[in-house]
Length: 228
Image (cartoon, rainbow, N blue to C red):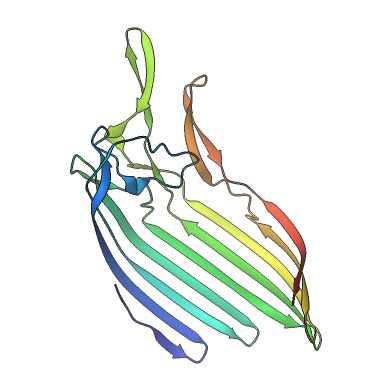
């Protein structure tokens, strides 16, 4: 990994980075030569009932850029962007995209702080996330002895991708600082655009189609925090 940290003004920072990672002796599955343990771990359910052998490889590489404005003059922001590749080779030694190879991602957050009194601060904050969707293995239906059998189509292993992930959060905080403690009222709305981000998919036998299960949509919440 190589990077350069440049504080080009009193409150601003620019940081570009490039990286490369090579993985070897990665556990793979002889019975499913297209698969690798690098694609496991974040599903609703993962079956680990396989015989793994350490004959796989993987590589990750890309470039990242960070632009940051520290909290001065009552405001701040932070923007990070990434372009990357994430590849692996299973037992069959064919290079494929990993499940997590979304290729790009952007995070941005910022806020402004208002001073309402000697000890009272009101702040507003916004966060935006945009990422390339995760990849998945589609299913196919084959007929054997007049019976339909559903199985993964490994000829398209991680070539298809879910729709891109997008989320916009906003919040409002009012904090009162006292001599030995502080309290804060907050209200926030997560996923304010109610964007449908895919969590996982499964095949519905009755409908004979793939069905997407989505993460939560618009979610408001609020409360009080006490600091000692």
